[in-house]
Amino acid sequence: MSRMRNVLEYLEQSAERFPEKSAVTDGICTYTYKELLAYSRKIGSGIAAYCRSEQPVAVLAEKGADTLAAFLGIIQAGCFYVLMNPELPIGRLEQVQQVLQAAYIVTDREHREMALQIVPEHQILWMEELMETDENQTLLSERRKRAIDTAPLYANFTSGSTGQPKGVVVSHRSVLDFIDVFTELFGITSEDRIANQAPFDFDVSVKDIYSSLKTGATLVIVPKQLFSQPAPLLDYLCDHEVTVMIWAVSALCLISIFHGLDYKVPAKVRKVLFSGEVMPPKHLKAWMDHLPEADFINLYGPTEITCNCTYHRIDRNRDYSEGVPVGKAFPNEHVFLLDEQDHEITEPDKAGEICVRGTALALGYYRMPEQTAEHFVQNPLNHCYPELVYRTGDLGRYNEYGEILFGGRKDYQIKYMGHRIELEEIERAMEDIEGISRACCIFDEKKSKLYGFYVGEIEKKELHHRMSSTLPPFMVPGALRKVEQMPLTKNGKTDRKALMEKHAKGARA
Image (cartoon, rainbow, N blue to C red; front, side, top):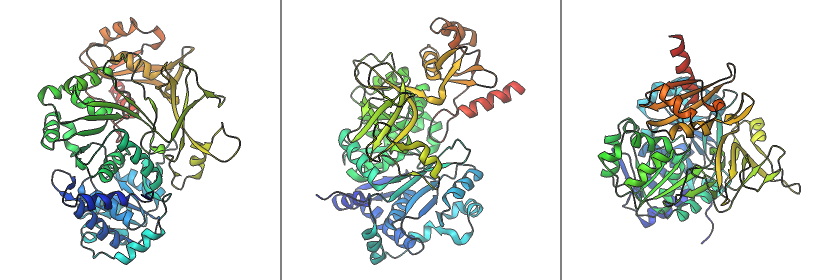
């Protein structure tokens, strides 16, 4: 079989094998593979009449079956898609458009007013009209013939240190290489029903979407409002007979914090893959106890390396008291550690920056050559020919098995009272204490003060006492603050900035 060059080949092959099988459902709308392919061609024909190949086309819509059809239509037109999440503030979407300069935004009538705040009406393509466009097979064939596998497939915008969002552009080749390995490694098949938790502007959803399309599985989009209601969320997972969950740690913890699994267990789930943050051992244990036959896999990797670069299968008989490893590299990816002098670290227990090379690397940041050059750099271990590596900014160290243990962000390694401290280590110690479900530690450089935020029933005085019995004095936060729940970023990670802002407001009140 010849090597695939375009992710549309996943869709076309599954539509040929399983034409009447449900490709995607969002609880309201369901498309078979045959229907999804037909709608993608209609939408693609409409878009191709306006846009040149390899142009960005934005989609302003809630995640759903129609949004997936829009993504695939944009790909049919030879362009690449960018989701503009309507939940984001309009100012943020304007910033994204400032960087992206998309000639057109695809949206529906529901989001008309929001779209008009971003672009003038002549730059809006209406979803309802695109879905009724006649298929132009000649035009689509021309676009496909010209397409190459290193062409961009999508861009996801992440926070930038300058305050301006960065668009990480990822190619067809990167996704094809990753998904081929991912589905084979974890045994995802056409029998699976994959529960999509992640927003469509977050790269965890890339695994959901393309694992489904490649294997002929069904993508079950979970409505976002259910993530504030554990009982209806579990009802939904059970009703839709979900078998695979590729979720953010925070979403899994939401269920276990409220003891949702005591209410109902999604018993058909056979694989749980998690990423985004360090999984607290007590929450992992809760899930494993309720799903004794399921496989649990820890995944790691920033957006810039196409979803994930390392994985670790949880061993139910192993002691994870030192933390769950992020594991070893995926096949055809090289993940290694560099010290501060850019020398490779090979021995255990020495911290270094996690670096990655291989076809999984993103193309870079859209219209940001300086930031791209800063993070996608010449491999310092290779002086013979050009070879890019991505410097993640994350710290790691090897354990005795040669697996990488995540050591937090370089930015979260602080110097306090003369000591070098990992904030994640303090958080782990807090979460090990009975009565605490989540914890976050923040260092205020201006005040040179450590803050500990937590969700749980324990009183501050008791928490301080318990922490003092396991941590040295310089690692016990001077200020402990109980919160109802951890604020989350759109990527499902703890929003440290929002926590500090909330603390500042409380201090002023």
